[in-house]
Amino acid sequence: MTAVNASAGVTSKGATNTREVAAASPRGASVELVAVTRTFGSVTAVDKLTLAVEAGEFLTLLGPSGSGKSTVLMLLAGFLEPGAGEIRVDGRNISRVPAHRRNQGVVFQNYALFPHMTVRENLAYPLAARGIGGAQRDALIVRTGERVRIQELLDRYPHQLSGGQQQRVALARALVFQPPLLLMDESLSALDRNLREEMQYELKELHHQLRTTIIFVTHDQGEALTMSDRVAVLQAGSLAQLGRPREIYERPVNSFVARFLGDTNFLDATVGGSSGDIVEIKTSAGYCLFASATEATPAGRKLRAMVRPEALELLAPGGMDQPSPDGTSATRLTGRIDRAVFVGGFHRYWIRIGDSELCAKVPTMTRQRVFGVGDAVDVVIHAKDLLLLQD
Image (cartoon, rainbow, N blue to C red; front, side, top):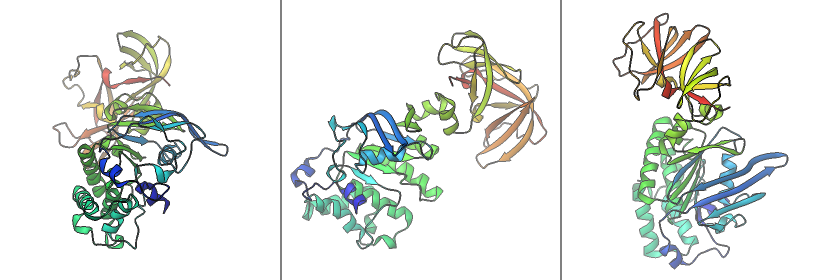
């Protein structure tokens, strides 16, 4: 009951003024967390978290289990109160405002639909709680049903719907009263892979149409990168990195973010000379490589370098050198294929180079040679793709 009330945004008197709801702007709300902390006994789930979400933005809270992302969402929804710090929506401190008085939609992993109500009645519930009835209520239900493509399901009960259809109904119920803020907690995780990918694109398209601010919680990296305007990566209740999907994928700030955002090759190395933002490093296996540094790095410093598997180029030994896309330096190493796996859209190779092993991903639909186990191969690493991490 609580989950539905939070989605409905009922006031303490049980309803808000119809005129206020009708006049509500579809513009998304700005959200700000200022040094927010939440503990459970001796465990600190959220630790002095400061984060600003722009009005109309699609922000994803991404992190492993225990990183604090769901706790942050529960704080935003009003089911938990922060032990310290403030939560502001459109500049107003709502830290102590109860869930039923926050005008925001909430979609949970289990959808929390009323089983004894039809789809139409589920959608009507948050409207009735606001005193909206008659033709206005029917128009909002029809319009929302069309937007999320459930107009033909309005007279069915939840048990008559597939998982994907139930997910759409839960989304429609959270959107029907046009909230400026929509909170979604692992809301696509119960769907099978194909339906989940379809809903990712549909939700992103719906966001473009409505411009509601969406804060989405997931542990799925692909989901976060596909849908978000920005991604906030959480680590042990703190903000590890905030940025646009491509930025955090290609330029992670530390090993945790690099590892969590996808497959990564790590190399322990020592810094040598530098020229601008291009640094020469020597790996623990004794190889000299050119890398990209985001800040000044003194010679002799030991650190970790990373390169994504899809950034590696594989060539037949002695083949023609490939120019670096941006004209920067590149390094060519010779190794041998230890393992090779066909994974539909790409081939995955593990290449043994001396005492080191690198993983490479090569798209299937390219003209590059397909290698087999035992084949000799040259690996080209461009300096722009080999990033030095400051941890």
